Image (cartoon, rainbow, N blue to C red):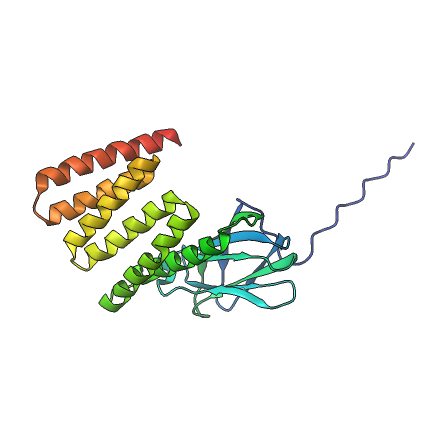
Length: 249
């Protein structure tokens, strides 16, 4: 008896679909535009990041009715990931569009749908905090005094929002970022004060990564203040924590 071969599976058409937690790494050539689909229900909260490993990219999000929902092309260039977060006003396929900031450039990038879930109370504030933190991080990556002063304002805008949504890990990370900007501006005393706040909150919340970073940052600040003994102690404590975190992975 003759056995019929199974029917071939249909080849998916259209742009690839992003799935939560799955990293897509691709090379984009000069002049190219890459597009991805994200299926969301009305009222879903979603967050996408794009790591710009080899090229500075611009990112746009278009909704099911072809309306632009969000866009990101931060001033920090490829040094800082692009971030988009939103709450879906309607269900359907959202299109994520990625293109080189400079159409003549090419390189690698990684795109990840980090979060996709039903929105909860406070997610509007979370989105505002994410956008302020992202802009601050981009401004921090620039080298001018004006951009770093702008970064301080954005970090300070984000802090109470993280506090309101109860995300202490992000609050610690934001404090570490704020302290780093003061340090880059030569305001070492202010940096120490902010790093101390980050360390205290990290200890209180059990955030080992935030604690390690705060201790490392404090070590750099105390070294600049001429307290080499305290700096060495903090460096050693930070190294111990980084080793502990590496072993736990």
